[in-house]
Length: 379
Ligand SMILES: Cc1cc2nc3c(=O)[nH]c(=O)nc-3n(C[C@H](O)[C@H](O)[C@H](O)COP(=O)(O)OP(=O)(O)OC[C@H]3O[C@@H](n4cnc5c(N)ncnc54)[C@H](O)[C@@H]3O)c2cc1C
Image (cartoon, rainbow, N blue to C red; front, side, top):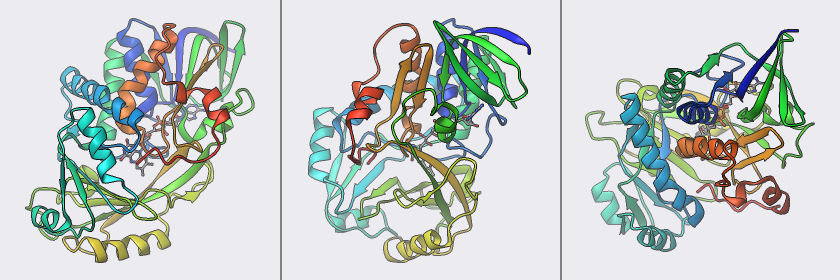
């Protein structure tokens, strides 16, 4: 058994692990990233060219976090030279969205926004149908997840980090102040701290060692619909809070040369595990989303041109999970809304390792133990 000593081992090179590695390396830490596949693979949660970024949240905690996160994304764009954000704005509406309350939160945070009636919104964004009050805010749009992972890993490497592909971790064991990480091929690494940013693989990897809250892994089905007028400017990102919320956004590269519209159902994924997920879009979800497009989005062709799946790992409250247990830092910011916060997550983990308590209390293990029901915070 080979025994290598590293300062910080980061397990996982998705958005959370890549952000953690970039932040720690920038702070002068020696970092080794261990990724079971290759960085940029499509088996987890961080692949593809489009995630929604937005300031509007029903929950004031997350709304407050969106500002610093956006600043960190801009800083990352400056440092890496990569174009990660498309600031197309965002629209929130539907019976499950308390538009007046979110507008109040945005006003309190001095985030520019407008509340329109449905007829006005339909005039402004032809091809979409609205009902009820419609909230628009311009400090929003999409984030290129693939490019973000690439940019963060590249910066980490420039600052001295080592990124290892094909390095599947089999076990993580705390040994007093340090930890031992054993890879599938038997290689053992001794690490001062281990950050486990393993997404949907967190429970199987760490569940026997750390008392995790119940984590629900779902395969989310996503469809790209052609726009009837590909020359028109792309619409803002949209959250339509029906009984089962639907979101849609400009697909970017994944949407092909015509920037097809990416559409998904937020809470109707298929319960699965990282090992057993099918990788195939669910025909029932496709049927529902096609019906949705016919009813609400006459500006799109109602037949998807492409489709894909992706994994959510959700806590019961949809709050992120971020805490230390001895030398191990558990880092699970998904619940379907973690991409937009990735660089902030990197800062929190680095602060945790530097002994600074900056992680919001709600994300700690103890808070998850006390919380039982879904607060639906991710919308
Ligand atoms: C369909 C979909 C839409 C989404 N939309 C949005 C959105 O609009 N806005 C938003 O903010 N967020 C969104 N999200 C959430 C966001 O994408 C996730 O929060 C984020 O990608 C989670 O990243 P992660 O690094 O935690 O997980 P992952 O990207 O899954 O990374 C975990 C990594 O760990 C590696 N790994 C696991 N186990 C091991 C092991 N034993 N050894 C070595 N490596 C290991 C895996 O291979 C993987 O690369 C969406 C997610 C999905 C699926």
